[in-house]
Amino acid sequence: MEALDWPREYREFVHLFNSRDYFEAHEVLEDLWVVEVPPLKNYYKGLIQAAVALCHWERGNHSGARKLWLSARGYLRSYPPAFEGLRLSQLMQSLEELFQPLLEDPHTPHPPPCRTTHPLLELEEAPVREAV
Image 1: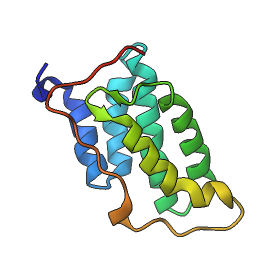
Image 2: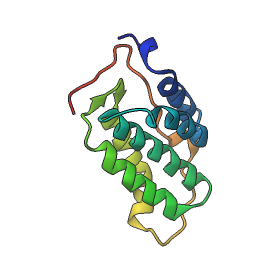
Image 3: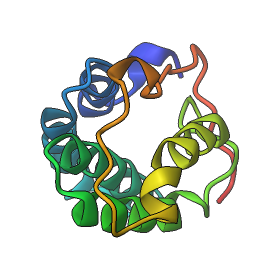
């Protein structure tokens, strides 16, 4: 399968996520998530929740950001390090580091991280799908 064979919604999610348009990224991937079946359904749900967590944090909703990141992390941890063309382990590590201040000190408002520190997604040319 070539990178162009990825579903349009998945490719658009990656583009919007990398553009830091997290709300629209989640909206696009939801269109694919609602019709998908496991194991992709929960993978997409984890990515959606990660995007919404970043959106909440940027909008000042710290408790929503923490809650959604913890949920996203729970979904995404069950997938292999490389899945569906993404280096998922790298993404998870980057997001874990990004969300660490919110997790360590949930009662103090934290400004959203600098937009240049947000992780970027890159689809591999040849999709990687390891068994879940």
